[in-house]
Amino acid sequence: MTARYLRLGPLANFLTYTRFSATLRAGKQTYHSLLIFRLSGGTLANNSQSTLGFKQTQVIRDGKEMQIYAMEAQCPHLGADLSHAEIEECDDEVVAVCPWHRYDFNLKTGISETGLRACVYEVQLRTEEDSTEEDVWIETPPSAESWEVVSIRPVSEAFVEIPNDEATINADGISITTPSDINIEPVVPGNPPSTLLEWAALILNTPNAELKVHRTRHAVGLFQTGQMKSIGRRKDAPSPPVVPPREKGMVLVDPTKVAKRGKGGSLKSRITMLHALANIEQWAIDLAWDIIVRFGNDRSLPHQFYTDFARMALDEAKHFTLLSNRLRQLGTSYGSLPIHSSLWESALKTSDSFLARLAIIHLVHEARGLDVNPVTISKFEKAGDTESVASLQIIHLDEITHVTSGHRWFTWKCGEEGIDPVQTFRSLVRERFQGQLRGPFNIDDRKKAGMGKEFYEDLVGGSEVEEATGAAAPGLTIAYES
Image (cartoon, rainbow, N blue to C red; front, side, top):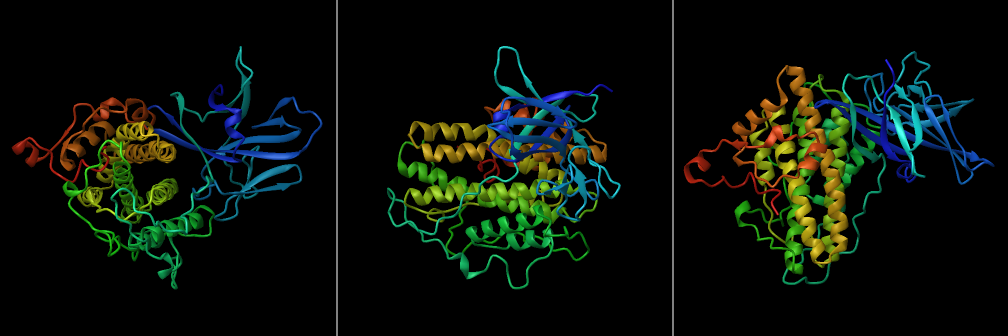
C-alpha cells in the first residue's frame, strides 16, 4: 500500500517543546495516538539545508542539528504510555526507553533488543508553492479512511503554581476567605497509595481543593514516568466515595440558589463567574478520577484509557489553579461564594454504566462547555480583563481534547459491544438526561472532538418534570451555562 502523509502544522510550532502528543482520527471512531520527538544535536557549519533520513527528518537551524521522529504512543509490551520515555544514544542509534519496564525502541526503526517492535512513521518537511514556511508532514497508519489531526499538545506543559500569598483586599462586595493550609496533610500520606486506583480514591476523598491539586500532580507524575508500576486492577481495589467531601468552610447550596453571574461588566460579576467556573473545575478533577476508580477495575480497558483520564485530571487541576489564582489577583479566593454540586448529581445518575457516564458527563456537559466558553470569553474581553481571557482560552482548548477523549472511549466501548455509537448516545440521553440539548452549538469545536450534528441535533432528554411543567428539572443543565 502506498504511504499516505498528513500535515501536522508549521515547523515553527514544534520548536518550543521537544515532545508532542498527537491524536489522529480516521472516519468517525478510529483513533490513534502518536508521539513526536524533536532532538537537538551538535553545532554544524551549514545552517540552511534540510535533509530527509529514514523515518526521521534532520533539520539544520541556527547552526544546530535537530532530528524529528514519530512513534506510536503506547509501548508494544503492555501498552504503557511512552510520552515520558527516556531518550538514550547508543553508538549511532537513538532509542526511547519505556519508563515502566525499560523496554527500548529505536526511534528510526522501532526495533527493540527484546524482539518487540514499535510502529514508527516517516516525517517529512514540505514547503508549499508561494510559501517560505516549512510544514511538518507525517506518514499515517494504514487505514481505508483518511486521517485527520484531532489535537497536538506538548507532553510537558508548564503548570501554573499556587501562590503562597493570600488575598487581603475586599473586592467589590465579595467577602474574602483565607484558604486552608494544605500542609495540614502532606501530599504523600504516611501510608502512601501504591496504585493508580488507590491514588484516585485518595484524591476523591481529599476535601481541600489545593491539596487535591497537589496530589493530582504528584499521582499523574508518578504514573506518567513509570514510578507507579501498577494500575491496581484486583478484587480488593478501592471504591469511590458516594460524594467527594468539601471543606467545612465551603457553603454548598442548591444550584438554583447560587448567585447570578451577570454579564461580566462589573468586577463583582466577573468574580462570580470565575468562582462558578472554579467550582466546576474542582468537580471536574473528581470526575476524571472517579471514572478511573469506578470503572477502571476492568482488565479489558486499554492502558491508553488510564493515560487519557489521568491527563484529563491533570488538566482540570491546572484549570482550577488558573481560576483560583485569578480570583486571588482580583482580591478574593475560592470559597468566598456558595458552591453547588450539579455536575456530581449527573455522576450519581451514571454511576452504574460506563457508557452512560461518558455520554452524559463528557459528551453532554463538557460538550456544552464548548458552546458556552466562547460566550464567556467574549464577556471578559468586553470588560478588558485580558488576564482572565488568557486563562479561559487555555481552558477552552483543553476542553476540546476532553470531549475528544469522551468520544474516543464511548465509540471504543460501543465497538466492543457491537452497537451504533450515535443511536446509543441518543438513547442514553433520553434515559439519563433531563431537558433538551440547547443551542446555539459550537459546531466547529464539537466536530473537532468527534461530535457531528447527528449526535445532538433535535435531541431531548426524558423528564417527567419537563413533560408536566414545561421546565427542565434543576441541577442537570446548569453546570456550563453562562
